[in-house]
Image: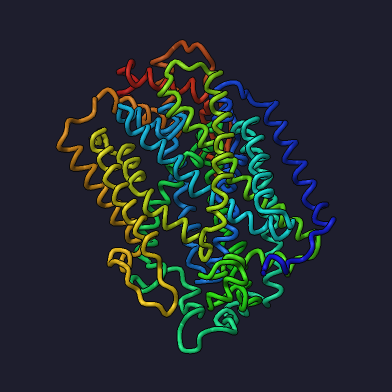
Length: 616
């Protein structure tokens, strides 16, 4: 098989992997020493003291896991550059997070996303519903996909047994997640981002040198056809629109209306309401640093096209009989998956193109990508379970108890992940990246719509939000089950699937699901009593005060001095900042030295100081 034919692992690879692992260990111990891990804020939000560049690196590393390297390269090999739309869509959504959502989250003083909806709407059922849903998504999609993708590299490069490789990585990852909290995760993400960029850009250079440059790539890609191709069918042929992102709205695999709208809805969920992503922005020491981190992550999102998608297309050119296999029997022999072997495109490049030593560097890249994703998920899932579920069961829990519960839950996640390995082995690997985006389009739009309405439409109430979530989730789960029951037919086979599965593209379904959720939330909210004014006004006025602090510092200081002539602690200090970190180059601005202290002050000002509220 493909894995048995891989080259022998050597001491040069050990030389390249060893230093990176030692650096990761040093960062873990540094984060354990520097941060206050004995408090809820210190463990789950890194003490709120992260500067912009680790925040940005962690945002990128948390997003780009081993599933990206395998999945994006596989999608590039199978259908061209269109999958890049997900990456470039994320460039704008992460900026929406920093400029629109983070001020609201910081002002409300929350630790988790379900907690925000609980404060916004009251009651507990939405918070519990979302907490369970988030844990379900993390355990059974994110972890499983990353483990499957990482196993492709580990198994071939180290010749380890699959179970030993994945269990070892999970245990090591869990140890430094448990020991160091979010600070350890962010610091190691920063190093792993550097390793990922260095290795991936190196492989990109080797790939383009081998194929002859971009022009030769364009010419040779359409000739990359397996020798066992069916002569009278289009099975296994490259798509004619392979170098187009915006494609036909009816017949293509990426219809352009779906890219513009249907793709944006789940992307807003991921970048603006997913605990894994938002938690990193909340760990920033100020809003300006949160914005700087978002800008850095946005720039880095340009790179996957060049680091993953185009190398995947080059792999098809260099190894058409393997990567572009069309016959189910031959595909089964090559990669163990009769539906296609496009997901081996990236591993094949690593094995065949890179010399010894550099191959070890790429092994470090994939291990770094896998561990970055897993640590992010472990820490965020632990935060959700502890703050949204355990604290609901035991509202009088001490901080020490919450710390213990958070650490123990990470170990529980490791056990569940290990038990999931047999299903990972049996999963379909034809287009891994498209698989995960399909699931996202069925589960995430209702949550995104509820968050958007909750943040920006004050008439949204708890009944409307819960009904919208419930209806949207039921519809999305029905479509997801239909997809699993009625599998896509193979090339040349008749398509007997139901019309809703056969003709409604998953990106169009995302649009439909978002509209249905929007209608349900609005109608139910208008037909029922409005939310309590004091609950809504506290969050909305708090956000207004926060925005005044950021965008009009002199006026904010004047208002603060008039309303609070005596403040028990020094809250602000001046410094200068470049445009990239706040847009106020050359002038002083207020920066929070304690986000939580400022959050409490804002709550007091929004409810107890009419003069300040009127001024804002």
